[in-house]
Length: 194
Image 1 (cartoon, rainbow, N blue to C red):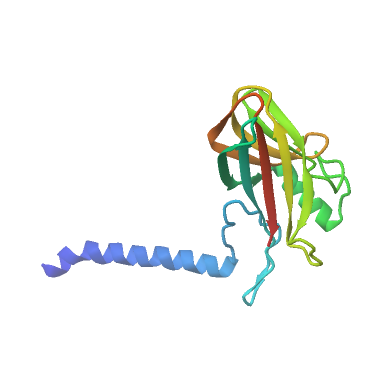
Image 2 (spheres, rainbow, N blue to C red):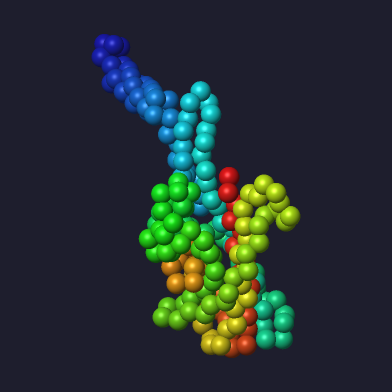
């Protein structure tokens, strides 16, 4: 009598044990792990605990100033690389292309920064610097642009792009930043390669 009541419990425990054992075995045999949000896993090789993963993470800082120069809001977030940016990195780093789709060259991928609202955008030329300052072996770069605002809008996105207008990365601004004529925004994207 007792055995027949416990049989379903043992069956469930056995099924759960097999399920989790299978997941662990798959993870150990495949050597796969998920990429962290905001990172691009370009190369991955795992052998005897060694990892050759290369990732790019972008932290975004947007500072909005009124016409009188007073800072009225600050927004921080993360970027997402576009498919064309991932393709360009793979093609240029491997040396298999000097003209990746969308960019046309293996340089100046972050020449401009745009802020947008539906059906309208404002752009500023980006200034790029290597990080850390004065580095011999650099770990990333920073793109900064100051953008004058001529209309009243709510900024909902930002993009770093090359001179032709191909987006290198995208940033969703939430909540949106309300700006007015005469305001300016300073957008700084700090890219870290790890």
